Length: 102
Image 1 (cartoon, rainbow, N blue to C red):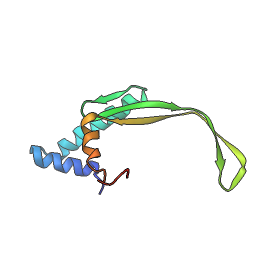
Image 2: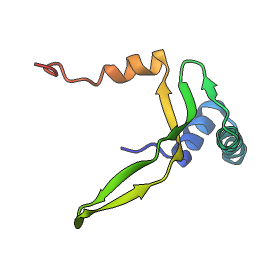
Image 3: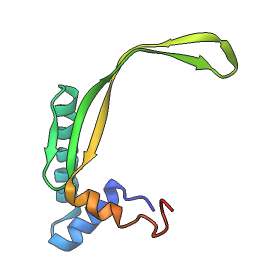
């Protein structure tokens, strides 16, 4: 199952009693501000949720599987990394199957 922005808006609206249009505006503004900060290279830290950070991936040489004899240079690029917070990590770890690692 996938949780969409629309799903968030509906759940928050039902739980808070606010109009869906108001909730949508707040959720969208929140996401816009996060994206804006990341686009400036800033780190976004949401306590008990996680940290979004911009990292620069190094240039590297790739291979075309259809023509492995040809090297394909891949330039350096910025990418967004997410590190889950302590509480989220603990909740997600509960999904680990009981016989994992055996």
